[in-house]
Image 1 (tube, chains in turn green, red):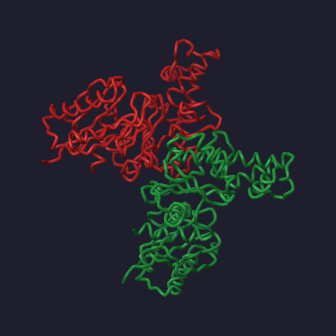
Image 2 (cartoon, each protein chain N blue to C red):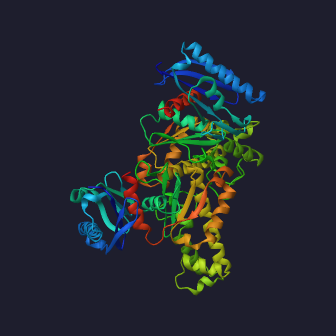
Image 3 (tube, rainbow over the protein chains, first blue to last red):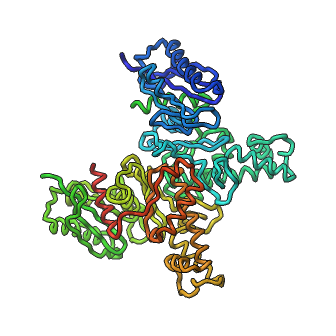
Amino acid sequence: MEKKYVIGIDLGGTKISGALATVEGDIISQYTVPTKASEGELPVLGRIIETIEKVLEEGKAVVEEVKSIGIGSPGPLDTKTGVIITTPNLPFKNFKLVQPIVEKFGIPTYLDNDANAAAIGEYVFGAGKGTENMVFITVSTGIGGGAIINGKAFRGSTSNALEVGHMTLEQDGPICGCGNHGCAEALASGTAIGKRAKEAVTQGLKTSLANYENPGSYEVFQEAAKGDDVAKEILDKALTYLGICVGNVITSFDPEMVIIGGGVSQGGAVVFDKVKEVVKERCFETLAENCKIVPAGLGTDAGVKGAVALAILESK
Amino acid sequence: MEKKYVIGIDLGGTKISGALATVEGDIISQYTVPTKASEGELPVLGRIIETIEKVLEEGKAVVEEVKSIGIGSPGPLDTKTGVIITTPNLPFKNFKLVQPIVEKFGIPTYLDNDANAAAIGEYVFGAGKGTENMVFITVSTGIGGGAIINGKAFRGSTSNALEVGHMTLEQDGPICGCGNHGCAEALASGTAIGKRAKEAVTQGLKTSLANYENPGSYEVFQEAAKGDDVAKEILDKALTYLGICVGNVITSFDPEMVIIGGGVSQGGAVVFDKVKEVVKERCFETLAENCKIVPAGLGTDAGVKGAVALAILESK
């Protein structure tokens, strides 16, 4: 039978989203269930299998027509063995996810972490379409990344490449969740921006951020736009570090494009203008001029589209 | 005729070294001439052609038996068009080097910058033999790098990837030759170590470095080993930054191995122990434990061996 479909599964902390798509990436049917991760690994596996069956049924497709399955999940995980090693938001430990799915359906199945899946999604369907070398950076509660090198997903030797949020940017900078000091994530993530806001309020600085009970990065963007000097300075410092992080990525990978997604990227021109300014200041001219820095092209469906793209790219 | 040979040419600031080697990399004959770069591009091209003819003659080989030629040169250069764009130590400007060599000999010819050629040399003949993903970092007057990804040289989209010496490691750090502040090169290169030594002497610090007219990194290593506190501190700071640089490379590329070469790496255990300590402190455990950090395996012939390796790898 002609293999005209792929399936993408986005395994998240709150929900599992699945889609049946053509091998060109057109979505035929979708299905979503709550993850209910606390129930453990087997029930979650069951719901993933249920999702696969539902999208097939609704799409009037049969297993024999499916070329591959892509699964995006929080990491760290082992892409080679298809095992989720452990993850902060899901109570899994060495969860062998891929093997039972292959045994059940007989379809080649590829697991990857969500940042890589998002990078692949941007490459296949989003802002990175048409490039051969691109880096995707997501800036929200944390900072993560993924890269496409010569048209293929680049994962490194332990599937942990592009952990750009954990580049050291200040030797004695603030402590990071990972235990290190001065990581990009501790300086420029949404969480870091929120932390600086709370510190400013605690220090009794004169700022409109004090009007919020628990100011986060969203409030910092908002108050900075209204002209609050403390909020403006917090934002400027964080975005300068984000620019340094992006600059270091450009200096290392020499990509055609850096795509920035995640909550902080929603800040729009404020974010992109600053990042581009810092990159121009700090990178070699050839590198900086060659590399486009753009917002992510995929919206709310980014997770499941990334998983579909993973299925397409890995089965090529 | 059987293509059983390759030729490697190392174009340096003072000399041009060439070698004829088997496609397995065993060197058959060698030849060296002074570069005399000040005479200009055409005479230098002539001496490269002379070198190719000499190694063929001495190796009793003919043009038809040569599979490929590899040329390592200081950059920036364009590997795709075979043009040396410009280089600090050679008075070249858009020097079309590859085309006339191909026209003369009819042999596929590959040009690459010396850091990439050295990385390829280490991968094919040196410390990186048997790996699939490795990064080479050279630390001497400057800091440069090259990478092998999935068994192939990785160059990025403008042939300028792995400019790791120009990663920003301190936002307001010392100014670098490139114009940026706080680059790894301005903090951890041999030149940077020498600069700190001269500054310490000028500041009138109590140090045995004051016994030298013009202390450089070699003297700092020497006096630190003898117990001079100022020299020890200069070295410790620089090597900490080198460790951060290596750590950021590991966090970005997740390689199996980082190979460190160049003058500063001759410092031996002092250098490698510190770099490993910083990497262990700052990188994810999986990444740090997986990645070996080792000294370069090729010695004085690294340049020409890198060029031979380039010829072998690119013609595969």
